Image 1 (cartoon, rainbow, N blue to C red):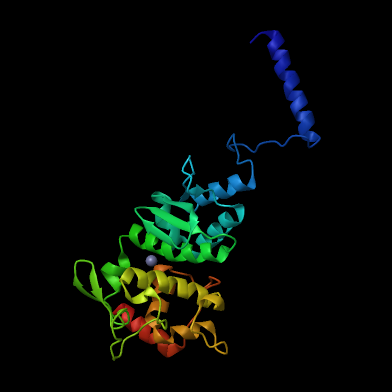
Image 2: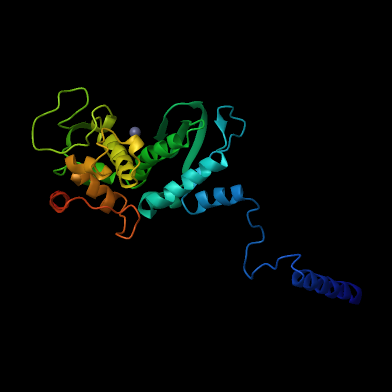
Length: 271
Ligand SMILES: [Zn+2]
């Protein structure tokens, strides 16, 4: 180093210190990355990718895809956070890719890719699709524990009758069977088409009931607590709480059913 450039370096350091002391520039803490996300949006995208394993597919010239809005990103982050590590954890090692399709209507999941039909101005649509389709993804990333370990236990009441063929006593499209079996109290949703739909809807129902989101819970007697819907299917409620989401008792969503229902569910799940 020549004496001139050495002098210049010292001068620069003095100016830097002076600016720092005046609060004009912020000193980077030791070990901090050189480039920190510049905007709130960048931070949200980084959080979604790094903490929750969820990556946004960029439009990259595909005219049917639009980037999510900041409000939509916020819904995705808070919902993934609340569903918890058990739910999103598998996405951290193998990212879940998502995109918003400018064509409105529904959502779907397959091969690591979750499609949201454009929710327009109704953020609750994005929220509900995310819980349902994200649950399909979480179950798949965990190698289908519901199908392989749980759904044939008493209380879930599924029977496997062939490759990817299942029957349930309330099978959609057929007359509901009489008997001592459990079901979600909905009669026009797809809960009884396959175990996968049963699971996606039971997680969604669990979330809406513990959050008291009555708008999406029907049929619901407004005079009763939202969790009363689970009286017909306590095994599903306890399964979502203790096994699929594994919520700690300190979680804001942690709720309990009446003791006899808890006991029935526990005996089914341990059996
Ligand atoms: Zn589905």
